[in-house]
Image (tube, rainbow, N blue to C red; front, top):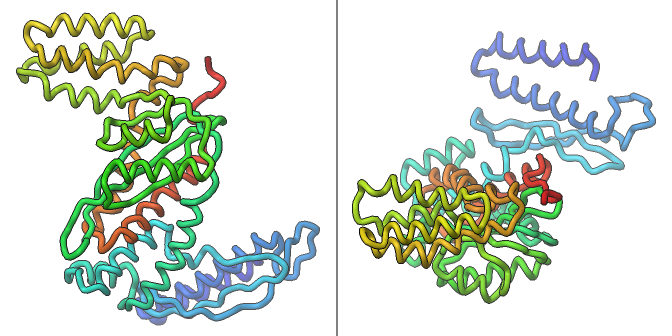
Length: 387
């Protein structure tokens, strides 16, 4: 693309806006999109039109018209074609996978007749046009195939496994019910994070967890040296069945919150919290156990139920002391997964109520796919050579 050609395209846009004002927006955007796709094709081919270069990967092969619906109106674009290399312009993608999944969730509500006028208005705004059940079905199928491939991709050695669950509202059998979303994060031998899988189900907690963990193993997950999670109902039995003998680290953050239920006076809470933090921040396991026994003795007279609870439950939060010191801070809680859940919530709260389990799984999978891709191409999370 020459400098003169860029000027020509810009001149066309300026002329359209000058002569037609807002009425010229559709045509102006069409010109910009077409130019952007030409530039993208040249980058993909590693050669400009008619340019001779040793790095060329294929050839331009004309254009194909494509009509798309936008918030500005109907727009017919000239999609660049190639020969000798696969190419499809990202410039016309309707946003990231999570955006597409969110639109589908809202559109499903609309076409199933369970949406409010507000949801219909949002669908109109996001999709740019009225939607039909056939359109939603075709769009959902295309995205589901992509996400299903990601959810079933092969796994490998994963020394550290972090598990958590959250709940979303789903319409089921004419009622609104809580639907469990299970998420697994792994840290691989290179020290990078990866979202291993996600599962959505209305089934009993233990059954759901057992099936989810089994699916991870069937995909090749092995070499797990530590599992970090909260004390979720059903997870304990499923974890013992599928990962027998693997050490378990109970989330220290959730454990500290749970302890407050056994504190008899509100005024005691800051003191109890400080004592628990001292145990968790101890330099080694022997120091932690001494502080634990000291706390039990301290609260036995004034808060016997708290003392008993500390003695029974806190040892489950000290497993992390088996790890190198540089690994402990990031593996002693599920905070990393909690932050990820906040990102999921940011997207799901727009829909509020999902029309079915598939719709929920689609949106959550789309969000997690994008995050996992960022992690896998990003910085190392843990130095796995640390001792």
